[in-house]
Length: 235
Image (tube, rainbow, N blue to C red):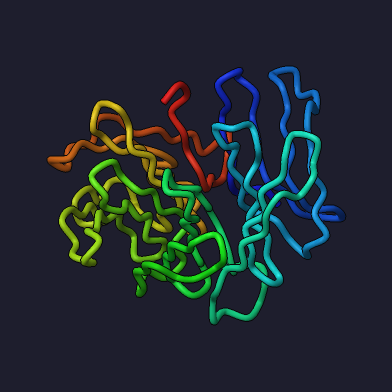
């Protein structure tokens, strides 16, 4: 199972995986493995390469954020908290913030939490079932892909929703399970639409402006049934 990836500055792709083994792997454009980390956790589905060259691993069962160095040594483990028992949907996307904290999406619980490195919750936003990803914006607000609520929202530190794009804003997209949301340098947002149960109709990915205009949308139902995450390369 692979649901989250990151395109690195050198063109390689980092992705988390689970199966007979679970962990994270970096491959080059020839498909050759250039780095990997095998976890002892039951499942890993989130990861992020950090600016210092380390890799952040989102493990489940129990949920935790593990920072490993380029040779695979564990440097730090931050315990994460969720009331959702089955490990498969305990943690999705994780990001390390400039202040050193961890921002994690707890899909099964429908919660976004910011943790300090010791695992203390310092901020949270709940009530977003199957949330796939949250990103802290430069203005201090948080952009959230709200899963089966079929919307993307921006919330302030005080938890006020100041921007929202949902299914009713563009019915032709067939928003089904909004898994990823990438803020772009032009101010727009790239959204990954997981068409689970709705395969064959709607858009897999699209870019939307802040005034809720769809700049472009992509769908190829012959090539793929559904996707989870979408990314613009070079952002």
